[in-house]
Length: 378
Image (tube, rainbow, N blue to C red; front, side, top):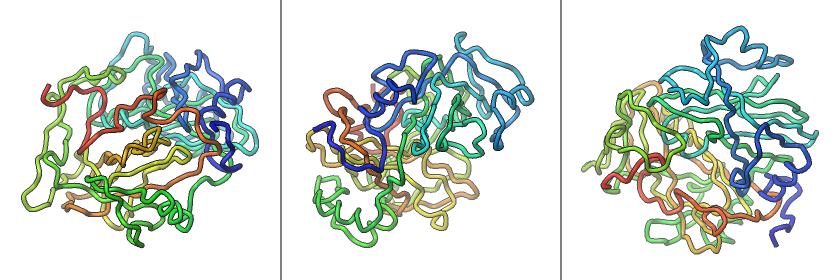
């Protein structure tokens, strides 16, 4: 069943990614470990070469990043000595992985969830490609990550994974008509906290599944402190969250004031399910509905909120929010993001939250900090 073809168009699943590695489409300076392969994505890894540059940039057509780095690098950083990456500084890190894409393959990258939750901005760069995150068809070359610590100092090591790559043929996104049919077929893709399916309406399906913010849980948000503390990115349950975060409890009036430029961790009111044959990407709800960025880490592998056997009746999505231009008054139940569902080409041979692939966030409830932090009450 794991080799069953679902669609000729869509995202490459885990067993196909393995085949692309074996066929040389994906290669690496280091061994690609099995745990880098996710249901419909590949964790990219840092090499030992980092460059502190003057600012963000994108190459133009025909330009190699390696050549541009000679002009804009302030200093080269060896990651084997465990340097501390400074807040607000821009680093370009050469990744171990390279691509040799065919004419009908393209790729797209996202922050990993644990990277987004510490406000460590990571964006993919490729030679001659004047766009972040996208790798165009027929690309043959190295990959780089632009890394900017936004809220905390960061410590990274060679081999750490900050972002993940997905490979596609065609447009994998599912339109509203088909999404409505899937919603009915699965007897709901959004659930409430009591595991009851939320009825499908035109307000829920609007260029994707619309999700809203939850301000009625006991702790509604975490806000990053303005501190010079170092997060060791790859270590689990290593830091006392009180050193980095303040907790915001449930507001009596159902309103939360978001201050300009501050970084918040919130959660959705709805619990979402991503069946194994699908993937999902979080997108901002609508720029006309509020002047804030709603996420960095926007990708959900098949099995999120579903589990391997379908026993999980949804999981709330974590929101990483920064008001960009002004303070913003957020109210309970306000639409805040959309989930865009995508087709996988095949049913993955490993499922998020299954026996083979464990999960840090499958059973999260309320706003959830990154894996780097101990439990608040520990």
